[in-house]
Length: 416
Image 1 (cartoon, one colour):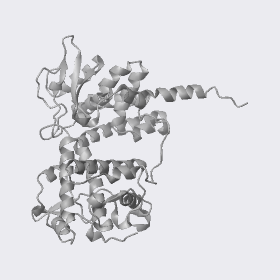
Image 2 (image 1 turned 135 degrees about the vertical axis):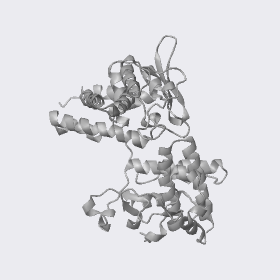
Image 3 (image 1 turned 45 degrees about the vertical axis):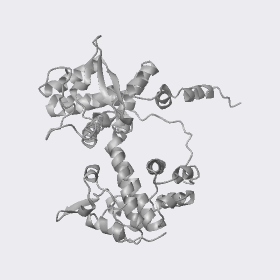
Image 4 (image 1 turned 60 degrees about the vertical axis):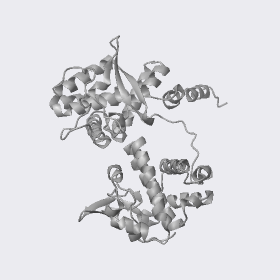
């Protein structure tokens, strides 16, 4: 494995907000890294990556920007320092070599924990010497032991994410007439590190008992302190309205407001949502959710129910103005998960409560949708509330009709 000195590694791109205002003059060490090379394509390719990431942050989401930034940085650094070949000249074999590199990167490319890429020093942005392109989770007692870094292996999800980001990157370059083809797309099917997965997928969700602990804890916390009314509203909305965490958050293209709740002529309540793919949808708001909306609004000194055109922030910050980011929202949900886990563990044992410890915010969306299916709600209506492009997606994720038929027929097999 090629040995790359730590000092040659530098992060290439800051946060999305900083990227939008970025001038290389403010990043002298990065500019030096890009321009001191004898290869002129380094700076050119960096600009290509910057344009692509700006496009991603503007048209997708900050989460997608962060995910793609990691993959584009790794790929460009590999092109510059390892493969030493311009993007326009890479072929299928090069991409497969890069997959091998990602499977076992040099230990000098691997760090522990997340580190900010840049920090301010004398009015300039300076790259962090602790930052590394790859990260490995390890106990604190093992940190800085090079032998541990050799255990790094990307998950199948990480490998898939890498190929996805690079395929999208090359497609963007092709659309801008900067590249003629997409070698990543061609190489993906021949990557030896992929495992074909035909397993039956289980929906990551809470059981009805685990959800009840979650809800009970959230209600208790809100009853004890008005500050936690926000926590209760968030988890009730994620589960009952099948929301993604990003759909409650403040984003550059969308600010969720109370006015996005609206009532039709038949007095049915709806919530207007800005979802994946920059698509607007209206999801039904059940009657049982309205008391949670009312108590949250009353805790903020608002009227019991929203009115048309109301511009009040949907989930407000306690300090400062505006809505909350996905990171802050996740933190609040995690706080409730932690309390619910401790309560259920004390009553029913750690094994039955374990899912509350493992769960993420997205499990609440899955929990709500799964429970609706169990109650017999129509697949078409549920699919539209979820924002799926087709009922087939809802069936594949939640109902799994074909797997159920297979399991039922498999029960009749005989031993003799």
